[in-house]
Length: 233
Ligand code: SF4
Image (cartoon, rainbow, N blue to C red; front, side, top):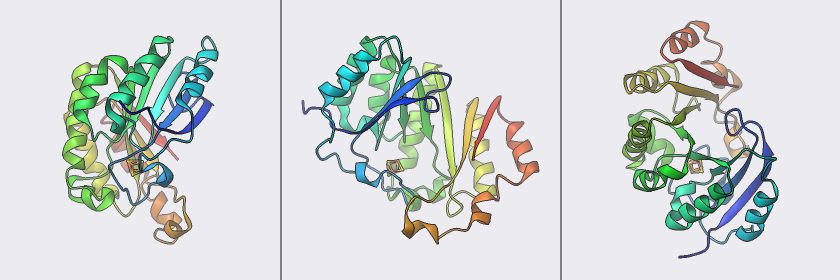
């Protein structure tokens, strides 16, 4: 088995695992090529910039100080067994384990589910727009399978919708909300799109990016559909 490839580390965060002090480990590699990706440097698995044993030793030294470790990416499950084995070792230190995922690997998620306590799953846009946003033909179906895998575990999940107006306007948000509500999802986060790179900044205006967030009636409608809705601006 190839050694895990780690491309980033946040040693301390209060916002990446709900209610817990956490570290975030970014694993390299992602099968998608989202139009708004802010982690372009992590998309190829390549060679990790961080020594996995040094990261592990750092996490070990934080036992009793941190409560959770979140695996993010890229797509954390793309590294397959190497990722699962590393997650197992970190979990054995006593941390709660979080996973930020685009849902592309439902089979890996199933295999790793017993090691994971909470996931933040990206529901990127409607089925119609998914390929255009992600560059991948099967990403929507895979994500929906992961959604169902995680629902069956009955453990904690936040479904995240990033409102890039090129792909998620008001109609698309309502369509996604209907799908999630029908599946019994209880927590969603509606996230404002923030362009990270110069080449993205002129493709949308601030007014377009804020349209959903400024619509009180829409917010009320969405809030009535779920027990928990976070508006992440
Ligand atoms: S899933 Fe995330 S890491 Fe992968 S291309 Fe999309 S935004 Fe980037």
